[in-house]
Amino acid sequence: DAKTTQPTSMDCAEGRAANLPCNHSTISGNEYVYWYRQIHSQGPQYIIHGLKNNETNEMASLIITEDRKSSTLILPHATLRDTAVYYCIVRRYNNNDMRFGAGTRLTVKP
Amino acid sequence: DAGITQSPRHKVTETGTPVTLRCHQTENHRYMYWYRQDPGHGLRLIHYSYGVKDTDKGEVSDGYSVSRSKTEDFLLTLESATSSQTSVYFCAISESRLGQGDEKLFFGSGTQLSVL
Image 1 (cartoon, rainbow over the protein chains, first blue to last red):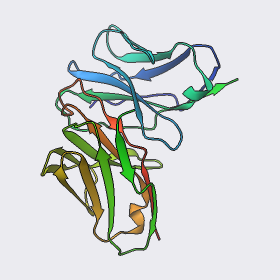
Image 2: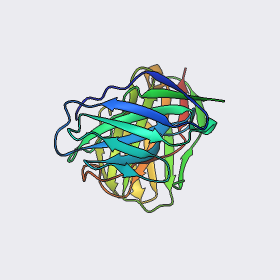
Image 3: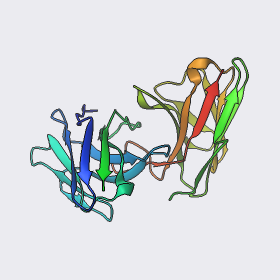
Image 4: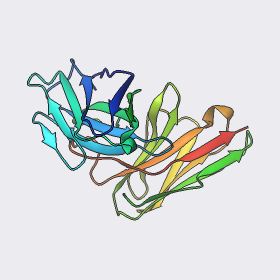
């Protein structure tokens, strides 16, 4: 699986959009980009995933650059409950594991 | 939230004793996984199951065994617990096999295990 690089930590004001970047410059054509988050003391929670196109669901939007070497997770109106560690994961099509790295610790402030 | 229950939620045990952690799901998902989470290592796959009585090893399987006699239950056993197995253990399920490319993992709330 391609390696991902995320900032260690970020802050965001409550009510504002949180934009979490992820670099995956070695991604190959059959690798998906996944985002999960982990709120303190809980299990990771699936957020969104995509292959080439931008995706949106009730939780977030995923913007993947045209060359697929980076992506951004957007939480449109961050709340205090969005404070968590956010993991960007790139997975190969036929890989049976989901490898979680260190992620980005997002702190939403009042 | 996916119907995943892990038990116990917390356990303290002594080195050398056997320990069994249980994962129970009500989603009827075929695939189940055990992960451990440690500072500096992130989440690492221990074992996974792709059906009743069908299991396979993950990245860090040494010292662990698993069993799946029913779709809804996946047991993780530490035959002789060691201090290095002190960790938070998460069970996860998925409807389709990881590797199809379009699957999602749903996690339980975790079991905090301390081996003294």
